[in-house]
Length: 231
Image (tube, rainbow, N blue to C red; front, side):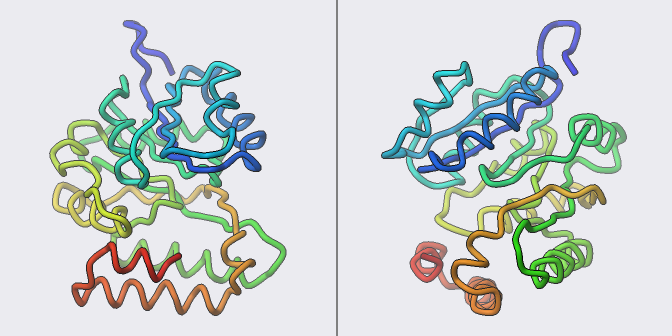
């Protein structure tokens, strides 16, 4: 995983905000990738709990920037050392050998970016159906969401202008820009993401909200207004 010149082959960039409850599981997961030689950057958006302190205490690199996933992920990309970035949500876990999978996926000139299929953790069987439709829709449209652990070559990320620094839908916009450079490499192995929002607010209610937000966005509603609805 480490190049001969001690520059990592993969930088994993994790935006976080008030994740103290989730930090033990997150840090344990990230330690495995750090030990394999991946660069791991946690980017805090101004947490008012102990998230940043917990990560710093066990030796992770923690950056602090303004709140907002787009701002945070761009800040991580600016200091990342590798030529390949992987953007990982704090409640999402990568499959085994994800580093090798990503580097193999981007080895040829055919694809400059990609994403994983997703599995949604939770007690309700309906979450499996939701995940299936997310994966299927992504394959049809070539658009990825942040839950799918988007990965991209540095050069292509910079050419796309990074994540648009808006309050919501930054992953949709980045996908659209990257599609102009190449189709995404769709990895069949699944990342595992938390279903806590789905279970807390109700699966059907959340599905309806997500589709409403997408529809409003395509009709031109500003991302800041969408973010207010999302909360």
